[in-house]
Length: 307
Image 1 (tube, rainbow, N blue to C red):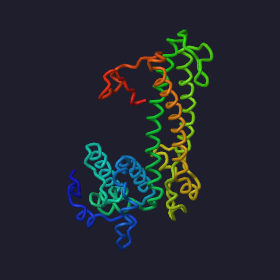
Image 2 (cartoon, helix red, strand yellow):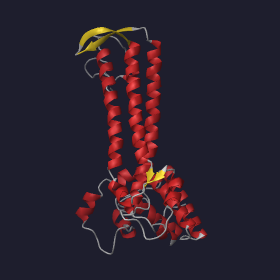
Image 3 (tube, rainbow, N blue to C red):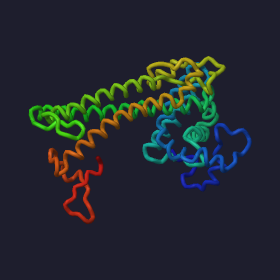
Image 4 (cartoon, rainbow, N blue to C red):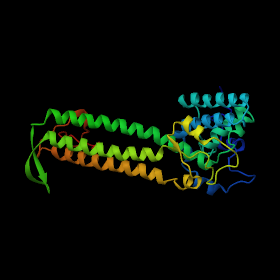
């Protein structure tokens, strides 16, 4: 399906076509808009799928309560699925003129699905819509991080199992302290990272609640089915209090960042150990050459730049 807005049209041309969801018949100062939305079009490209998934569920809910007709619902489904196809082909572009993914998607729907494209915004605000997008994105990313973490833990435990009896000095205060083993060293990081995964899981539980229906913090004046929307989006529960749903913006994201920071601290400690133990002076480990960069002036150098 062709894009209703040409990808290569000028910014000025796109601005005459695009309408911001919040716009009410006036033009925002250009410097204010540039300052507030400077990175939106770049960052929001990551949220296209999540916004579409949220809109598919919202449209289904509006149809279930009789707000959308069957034909309107079908038109919206088709248009939203076409966005997923375009996004997969890297052909659905969020430009600075769009401001953000919310406006880009809704303007596309209005162009392709007609009046139904505007009706989909009924009973939701940009506030709860972007919260849904971010939480769906976080759910996906947390699954990915947890999976990679488990692979690393498995590798460390495999190494520990092979070297349970391989002697290695144990250090305190950078001085040799007691006899230890490579196995004990490797298993220590596996256990630390498994604890970190528990923090990650706790952040996931906090994130796994649907804020849709909270609107701008005080709900909506029609009887929507918040649980139905939560179920369709794969959330475990509804975030019940509409004021708290909006007050939790940033709070849950901070919990995710804190969990990720704990993982980074343990990875940093492990990286520092490997950097130290792979020096000529220690000589405990040797890292494969293909993982190292070199020096422009010292041909003997094997630089562990990644660590």
